[in-house]
Amino acid sequence: MNIFLLAAFTGLSNSIQFVPADSTIKMDSVISLPDRYLSQVKRKSDKVQAQVDKRTVQALNRFARQEKKMQAKLMKVDSTAAKRIFTKSIDSLNNLKEGMGRKVTGINSNAGGAYLDTLQNSMKFLQESKSIIGSESSKLANATKSVDDLQNSLQQAEQVKAYLREQRQQLKEQLSNYNGFGKELTNLNKEAYYYGQQLNEYKTTLSDRKKAEEKAVKLLKTLPAYNNFISQHSQYASLFNLVGASSTSTASLAGLQTRSQVESIISQRLGNDPGAQQAVSQQLAQAKSQLNELKDKYSNLDNVGDMPDFKPNPMKTKRFLQRLEFGGNLQFQKNTSYYPTTTDIAGQVGYKFHKNGSAGVGISYKLGMGSGWNHIAFTHQGIGLRSYADWKLKGTFFVNGGFEENYVSSFTNVSQLGNISSWQGSALLGISKKYKINAKLKGNLMVLYDFLANRNFPATSSIKVRIGYTM
Image: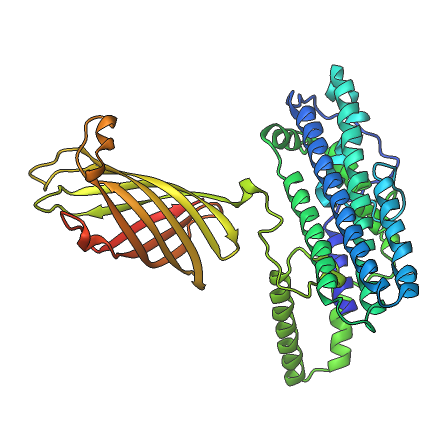
């Protein structure tokens, strides 16, 4: 496995262009950054920092409360062990909370990931290129401070996450000889796991560039001096110790194996036997498949110690707005002796309470289109109020159901909707098939059965087919 990891790193390093450390920043052209760029960077950095700090304090408080309960429970059985196991840990949790906001140095200097690393270096580049910013130097200083403070908060959060992970494991080992702590240990595991997932959510939010920031990045990338600066000061450069190395020098890559060297080693080990090479290829393909399956299942884990011992709910760390699904659907109905041909146009909003399920409400408008090609007339044929629930069955198939109230009479003004006798109820249950249209839009086809259709007067069709979409 180490051979393939080294090969991957070698390929990564070969894709990065490095420049001498003594290269100076020369402006090839004069560019004008969007006025809102620095304001957006500062506002976003401050917002994410506040979220990270708040969630970190929350995690420490919850861990401390849980450990105090566990200590009180163990005191009834073994007071000496209770003091030995929990006193120091609770004090450490309080010390971590009191240390929030202090400057963190040392490990994990790039806790914010590649995006924050590039953002920090962009701020440094602009500081050394005053001609780009001009009179905005004060805004640049404020934005740079916000970015640095955010990096510090994320680094501190990573240290807290590592401590919670280690402490959870220690408590599991220390309490292995005592019964009745399974639920408490699971709660600690949940808190540590969801805390890590929440941090990943914040990082994802951070990397979502606004319009002004996107434009600024594109403008900066047109400058060779900027690209050289990023290559020279990025975390990848420090990873391979390539800061200051010439673009043609490979001295800093000593010890790393190239792709050809890896292939040569495999060939020497296996020989030229086609059967052996095929067997190894099959095993590698199988291992890759299993690794991808595990990666898809726990895509946000960065440490084996974060593996949950419970079935996590991926929606738990999502904010309210992130759980909302907006969509709509169309339903066609041919004309009868009572009704013209109609099209129900509906809009809805749903709330994902689970990765497999959502519930929501909607409103529909019934558009009358006449009785045929020889009689086309657009009329207001009704309006409806809807509620629904959706749950995944298997793959892309879902069970869908809900209750609706529909005003089924033609109306010319809103006051007519107060006529209660013109409203009809529907109790629907059926199957929906969902499919992907693009990255942000999904389509669905629903076939529903109305259990109250025969009770309505005049009777309506029991089978309803709807074509819709969700965002």
